[in-house]
Length: 444
Ligand SMILES: Cc1cc2nc3c(=O)[nH]c(=O)nc-3n(C[C@H](O)[C@H](O)[C@H](O)COP(=O)(O)OP(=O)(O)OC[C@H]3O[C@@H](n4cnc5c(N)ncnc54)[C@H](O)[C@@H]3O)c2cc1C
Image (cartoon, rainbow, N blue to C red; front, side, top):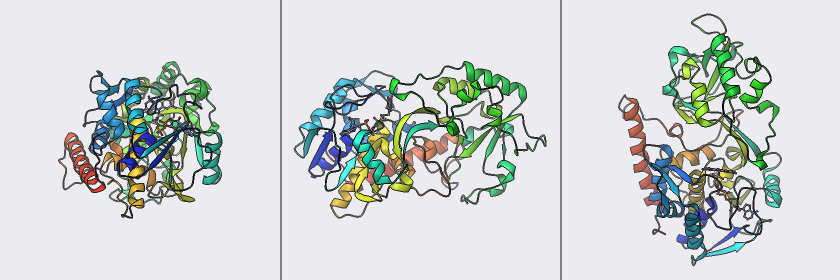
């Protein structure tokens, strides 16, 4: 996704590109065809509706003349509001567009050393072999993660605060100042469970349907990062002594520690999204929705992202990448796609597009024009590049409304839907302006 989009964006701007693809000589365990733009699993690029994060991102990509989205639109199959594609037609269209492009030379071989000159590495979630080793060496030590343990994220305004309370454990607050937040309320939102609810919750976690890992994903969990269902299998109280530990979290309504608690930690500086601390899981998405709704504070939760665990390869982008997505240690080398810490086909495509445009700016001697954070493309870019405070654990993200700055008090209507509409309209307007500034290219 990212490599195809990046090559196309550069070539359309008049730069000559060598596109190196290892298939068919070498195939990852997930890739099966020699086609470029191969969708390794689902044939859906998710919703096409601009009211959804994925639909909004695609709308922005369309406006930025994305090759991937143009080919998807052309090979669409009926799938309701989703943009699902006939995968072979889609891959063939991308392959033909790139192979026949006068500015692209397609080289079918595994890249094992870094060529001279500016290079974009977009080798995806299964990057391994000599290139993987080379990137790891370049990053200096253990800066490339392999197993992704992602905790679910919930929209702040969907948490039922009548059944939750704000407090940091032992009432210790962090020294990170968040503009507009009242630090007297504590950094965490705590969702208590009584004894009966906790017991029912554990039973549901144990019985819930889990996603079966791929053969090459045979789980090797880190002991400090176990899925909740694995912990639940070890005993009914294991979670209560782990991520659901109530110690130091006195419920102001009872004056006591609850039986168990789910802690929610702010996911962004806008405090519009919270992640469930330590809740990485292989439960199927509908099961997460059903089972987490047993927690009184989360009964009506709007999930911005569900939890998951799978093999992945991505770098600690805020630490190792600069504003052009270049390696700080070797600035002629840029990373794009899933390697940078985004999840999903369209997110990877978006980061290929951004990386190429930033490289084009640099090669043309123009000032860098990164996408504004108010757009979905920009929100992903800023997720990757924004400096982090203190001790953080960088986790990949897919596109979600929690990444966008909230509507400001002055400009937004007070209702939730009005605020969302404001965010969407602002994203569309700012994305159109960015595309105009960075130069659109003709439809492929
Ligand atoms: C098993 C699996 C299932 C997934 N299912 C989904 C899903 O259903 N929906 C979704 O949105 N996302 C899914 N993803 C995530 C998905 O892979 C990414 O979202 C997306 O494809 C990543 O885009 P990318 O451009 O970074 O990498 P890729 O699309 O994987 O592209 C990387 C390319 O680089 C090539 N390459 C790798 N190493 C070398 C080398 N050394 N030299 C030359 N070429 C090389 C590969 O052959 C490949 O063509 C899945 C991932 C995996 C592993």
